[in-house]
Length: 222
Image (cartoon, rainbow, N blue to C red; front, side, top):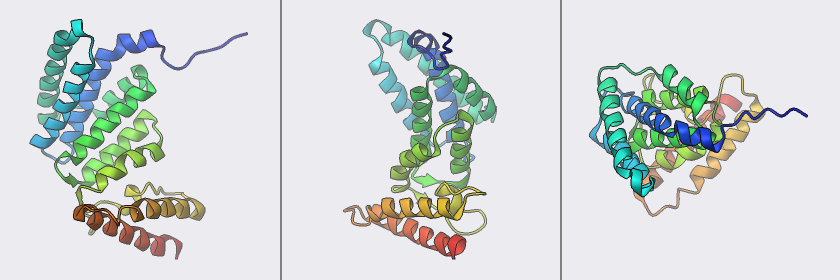
């Protein structure tokens, strides 16, 4: 009987954890710089994540963890400012040494960084799609992670430089009419549930998204 274990074990995950943390921070800094500038709020989102990691560290290793993570933040910030971060390289390393939960944690931080400045730029959403693809993550889980953030940010969904509505809803070239219908129906259900929110901004965003869904339905399904 031969059995090959393809997932990382606990010892491997523990051994790789500091490297995965460093890669996660570098990925988040790349995300912060995707729109052409490093916003203060985006930096705070990374620092907030670092703080949580430090708090969860064993008591005897908190100071060491804090020192390493702060050093990683400074180094990654400098690389991102200089445009010296390679997304392909980061994702390749994460795919090799990070566990599935760690990959989703890195993606979650990137989504939080994207929404930290209150805007969702086309460049940022494009980079998130690339991260999901290169890490081999489930697009549906990513959409579920992204949707609550889209309810609170500004988006430009008009014009040639705006956000691509199809990409925003996870509709890909080659999708069958049945796939498109399923994705649009799921989006309608999600955003309909937010129209009755007590937050005016959430209601406004939900109405915009529902209009986008209706326009795509007319365009793609007739």
